[in-house]
Length: 357
Image (tube, rainbow, N blue to C red; front, side, top):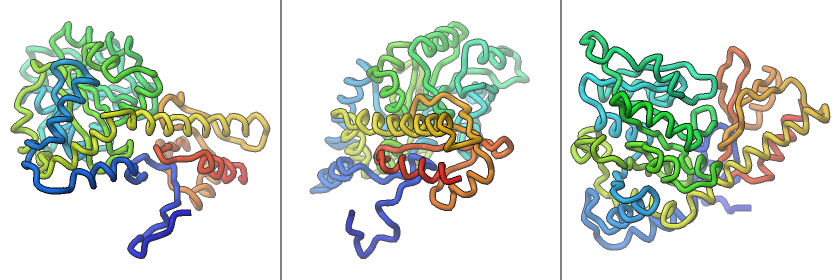
């Protein structure tokens, strides 16, 4: 058991299934922050760690990729989309998209971006779904569809294949639109697909992508990666203008290097994904054996989240021991998320609690 420091205000051995944001910082990332702490480095990104990050971004995303470290995912989305849009532009996204459902109106309030949200059954857009809002070009009364926004993995835990993304980018580019991928869980998608990051971004026509660190073992460390320079403009100004420019950027870049200058981002994502699969398998076995009842899955489990409908009494009892979120309370749908530090014993304890009722 971990010894609790006298300053700790929580039980460091506790685990929940509400969000991968609940998890702490991976020890290797903490070590990287400490290693970057000695002496002085030039501020605002003119440091050795940010310079190295540019080299690592090219290794993962290909020649011409440019990395822009930021503090958080909402900031990454707002800064990236602003750089891709004219003032009259609009973004087509899934109705479940983070920018539409979970960012407090930041794209609208901070950047003045019109969002054209499309219902989807699984959190994923298709060319046909995009076309429900991809119209009205030249109509001065309509915000002009300019960018298609995808989330990888999606907010419903599903993963786009490279072929699906290529179909979207080809279609979007054919009508003059650009494609942005919110990669808050990009490593989880890479782990599921067993592919390098560029295989489902750069190589299939994505223009700009974000890479998420916070959900995968980092502390306030994300980045925007421009893959097509012609699709983005003004990031050097917008990042400051929208309060995402770190003065001591070496500590943000050092965390991203800890994840990407090696395989830590994949090790963490594989662990989280594997625990989600273990959780789903345990529930399936419980249902088959009759030790659980009334639970049904609502989405495929491809990344690190399990979506299910659960009887209200079961959910209420389970919440006495674990935090997790309702996804659609009206139908009893919940979301259970596994993290890089979720263990088999954590999953087993959750399954045991689920069986009790």
